[in-house]
Image (cartoon, rainbow, N blue to C red):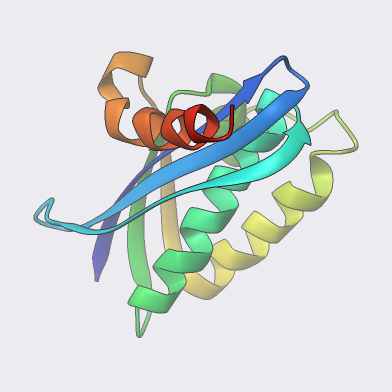
Length: 135
């Protein structure tokens, strides 16, 4: 089974009120799930990573066997670190990174692609709608 994920994180204040948003579509780009949630006060990088983590947790529930996931994010740092091109230097990100890597092994193949913010409008809107609702 192939799934397509768009994910984003937001933090107003960095650190500040934070949230994530993601969409999951099937291989034919039909939306099958979307989510946006508040995660308290934290940094933008934690919000971005948490969005990936929660999206992969949900994707695992949709896939009964080994899956292929294409995950798109507008955070170059997150994409490059999860792809193995950059090291994770921030100690507070390492536990989230490790959880994602465990999920990858359980799911199957996960490919990360960096995209410009304007191509990530649905996930961005989900993350920002959450923050707008708690002002």
